[in-house]
Image (cartoon, rainbow, N blue to C red; front, side):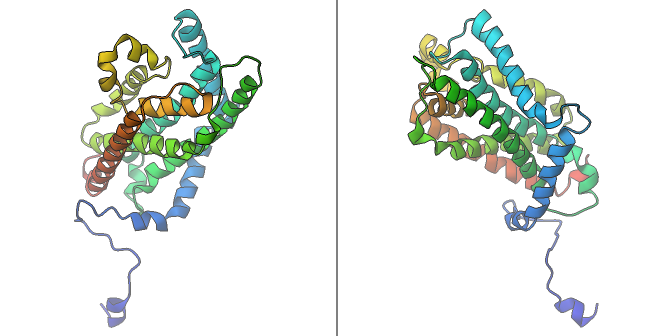
Length: 290
């Protein structure tokens, strides 16, 4: 090797062995343009060759809300804390969909992108981050529709909807936590599925079960009033305090204790950090197993 090549500063150094906490977050920032391209690709591919295209972003939560309202609100008669059933279920469905899509779509990151990962180098964390950002765009569109319905109900006489405008600033915090939790769970599963493909078969089923232990289709008061001895255990589900906080801010529903929300953040941070570390370790050798 010539002296010129020896002295040449390298932009990126790829090593086969790295420390546990060598996460290359600086590299992720350098590749932010790539993340933007991946977000555009993800959003385009999702609705490619569909007749209605991106309109499904709005149609899906509307249909889900209508089904929840009819089945759980009218037929089952589950409580909604005095909130209009349609708004109550819409709030739950759009936030849960954001979380569940972040989880399920990142859970197969290594398997779905193995051909790209095997040919081109870039920080692998760019892929799950782009997925979470794509779902955030979908949530933003759905949230605008949700706010339109909130305004409609607020203008109705005798409505129980009373948004807490002093806490609207909580929305970015709620979205950040929801995205981190969904992505954290997803990349943990993604790291494990490189060796245990069975987990792929269980993800969708597990997410459905998780939804039913989260107050998406019913109010948390159903558990706290009937089974007060299980409240502490029930609130260990990190999605529950987040969802309750979201409804409290934008509908005026009763929120859970702030302590549970702090617990939820602690669990979220733990899951996210563990997920990122496992993801970083797995990316070094996953091509040998997938």
